[in-house]
Amino acid sequence: MPLIPAEDPARHVWRMAASRPGGTSAALDAPARPPLAVSSPQLHGAIPVRRAHRRFTDQPVRRELLAEVLSGARAAYGHHWPPAQRPVLRVLVAAYEVTGLLPGLHDDDGHLGCPRWLRRLRSSYAKAPALVLVCADLASRRPGHAAALFHAAALGHAVWLSATALGLGACGFGGSSAEVTACAAGGTPSLRHAFTLALGHPESETCDRPGGGP
Image (cartoon, rainbow, N blue to C red; front, side):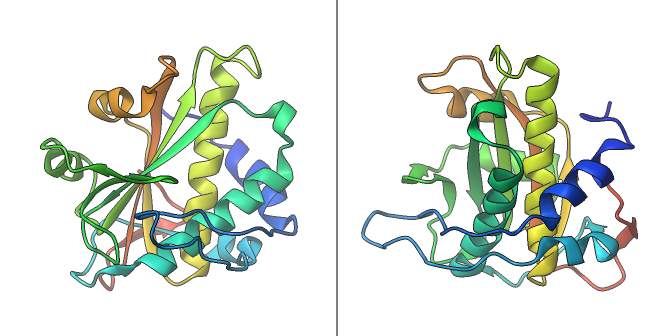
């Protein structure tokens, strides 16, 4: 079941991505490394060339490139939706082959460990160097359950466009993981894993239709 109606992503994500992005990246690894200062890509140019890549090469993704992908996505999303219109969102990264990051789960504050279920998580989605896991507060009164799912998917699609603009391949998935939900909840029990984006260097000739998804 899709998280958002089929006609919505093109209209809403185009408006979001066409906004002028900006901002800095979030730290992804140990506090010893300072956040990277990067500029966001022009995501609107990635919309017509986006593909759903489901198979990836063994080439690792650089930490700096991953940080730039997330920075561009967050800047575009944040520019389009002011804080008063957003639900609580939390982004985790499952790093498998990311140069400069320890294998395991990461958030903006650093390394969260490497739980045993992490290998199984990749087999549930795609064998990619990294999985971006978007979680949303589904109990939030602002903007509501359905809108929170939309916002999770919108941020996930912004990551997809940002990865495309920076030369990576990606594929989005709407299925959730109970283990990711449990890990992400922390002090917000109503946080739920809602959207997953697998990303890496795509194998040639392994993409779905333009702009496609699962």
